[in-house]
Image (cartoon, rainbow, N blue to C red; front, side, top):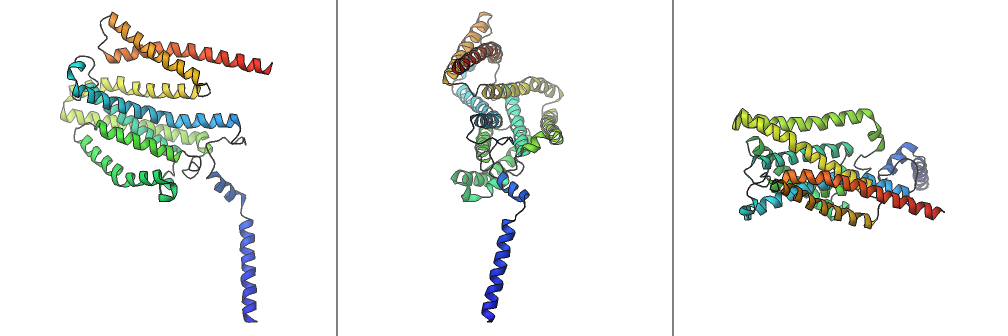
Length: 342
């Protein structure tokens, strides 16, 4: 009888527990569903909706394109330095951006380093609980496990070592900057997976909050000003006031140029994401033709060895070509949609 009574009491407790779990609050259920929600809007559209797919693709491009562009810039700078070291006769003259001992090379590396830190600040602001993705260990997959180990045993010590070298007067190594950028890009790809965005703390409510944007903007700007001020003070101590002022002028040109390239490429990727392959083939062809035209224009005036000038001329020509190409693509797309509806 005692055993039967104990069994009855345990079964009643199990029933109460099951009822409590079935009557879980909608708030907890919503939070648990939000952990697996991709970067979709709150309009209620399904994941299979073509419009929702396009919106999600654009949001992922906005987050990923700056990291890709920064990694490419690191790779170009590193490859140019290695090429000029092996073929110094071909790199004589010019702006010296690929010479390790030049001022412009040092400022370019500094600008890429500051941009990398600012993108890291932006990423941690959009994904405040990003560490939860790495805490899953092997359950998150092989790539997540390897990146988690590299964060603990490689990335953190190298950041401390590079910071100490920077404060001592040495510019960040281009190899280290490139490896950091690749690691950052791979880590962002893992965090931005649809099943990980909610766990990392991404919410549309935080994006729409004015207070959150004010805090993010202040921290973003403070990061750039702080590292620039540290570098200038270090230059005053090691190289003198005159050299620091020259570096300040170079930073005022190169650092905004880096961000212009990042956001221009991001805008083009987002604005033209819905076009087909033919558009991108024409896009690549026009980019190459504008590069040749920019070099020829600079060669006519005897300034073809100034790569920075050639790049600026190329940007101007390519901007005009891109606008014309996009207008043509939009016109063809509207004509095709109107013909299909008719």
